[in-house]
Structure formats: C-alpha cells, structure tokens
Image 1 (cartoon, helix red, strand yellow):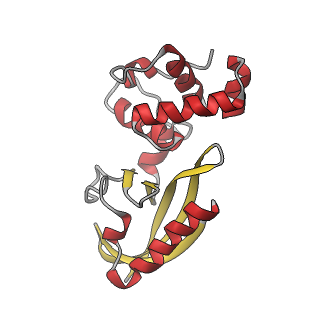
Image 2: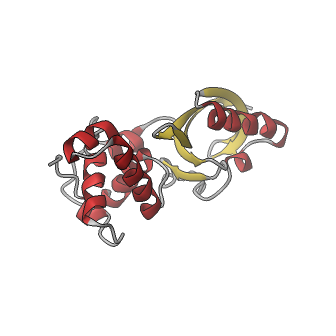
Length: 192
C-alpha cells in the first residue's frame, strides 16, 4: 500500500472504481508505471491503460496536473505539510510562471493564477504572446508534441508587470511513450 495521499478527500466525487483509486494512490505516492505494475501484479501495459483511463476520468492530462489539483484542493485544509518536499508548496513559491498546456496549446493549469496574474486557465498559450511572435511559439509547441524533446524560446507578451519579455522552456509530458501535454516554465527576463 502506498503512503497515504488522501485521494478520498480530494477526488471524492469523481466516481472512481476501487482499482482506479489504487492506481491513483500509487501515482500520487510518486511511483512510476512499472513500479505500480510490480506492486499490483499487473502488466505495465495494463497499468498504462489504467492510468490513461484515470486521467480521462479526472479530466487531467498528466501526473503534474494530478499533483496540482491535489495541491489546490488541499490549500485550505489544515493541517497541511508545508515545505520544500510538498508539490503544492513548490508550485506556489516558484518564481517562474509554470503552466500545464494540452496538445492544442490550451492552458490547463497555472501556478500563479491566484496572485493577481490574469486567469490563464482555459485560454490558449498563443493568446498571451505578441502577434509577431505567435508563429515562433506555435512551432515550438508542435516541435515538443511531435519530437517529444524539450525546447525553449523568448517571446514578448503582457503580464501582471505590463509588456515584458519571457524566456520559456517547454517540456513534454508523457503517458507511456505518447506526448499528452506540455509543462511550460516562463521566466520574466525584462522589458519587451
């Protein structure tokens, strides 16, 4: 049994099966799919299918989004661990804007959405980039999705500090061998 992850409290109304809850507990405990397969005496392929079904049921595209959702749901719960090993703490205190982006370029999570940053969730990443640089960003997203390799770019856009230049690193999020989304980390590097 994995370490307690409180999936009952966070994902209580999700209609998950007992097997999905067990897989979810293992994922939130930080186990890789192969480790989950070994613990549950299942094939890695079966676990991969369970993970994909679980992501669909929870409407997330990555483990990162699972952690982010758990962190958001437990923000107001007490007592709560707080420190450098807590994923929610790390995301809340990261200096960079960290976003989860789906395959189409839509922002599904942003770590600074409650600190005065405009509500990014549900918008397209390109909406926040100056028009002359949108093609550069679009190509970067496609490159990460198609190649499965990270890339970076610099582009200008308007944020809480006004019109600024951002250095952004895109990392692929994989479910098995398939790229299912992107983690984007954007650092403000100065005026545009």
